[in-house]
Image (cartoon, rainbow, N blue to C red; front, side):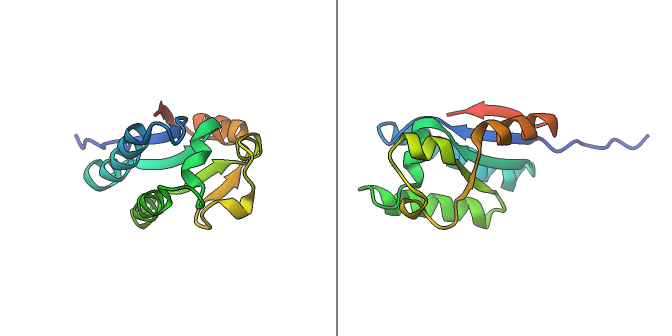
Length: 121
């Protein structure tokens, strides 16, 4: 009998704002390591205050830019909710160009329908 190992599919939702950098770093490290070590299929979605991570004009922007680039190099799509962006007073020109804009609720629903497990940070 041949055993086929299923690859985990995980939507990592970053909900914490810039006030909780530790949670955001854990989300990035978890995501990259899950891809590299467990061959998981990961997507990162910034939602609510989490969209602050994608703000290229904040004090910690280089640190977050590096983490976003590392995730993308690992093959992880990085997306932000356009509604949350607006609610946080940000526009598309305020975020890193590597971050795709989506409707957070629609994206979450789609990923759940595709069999993704949702983890929040």
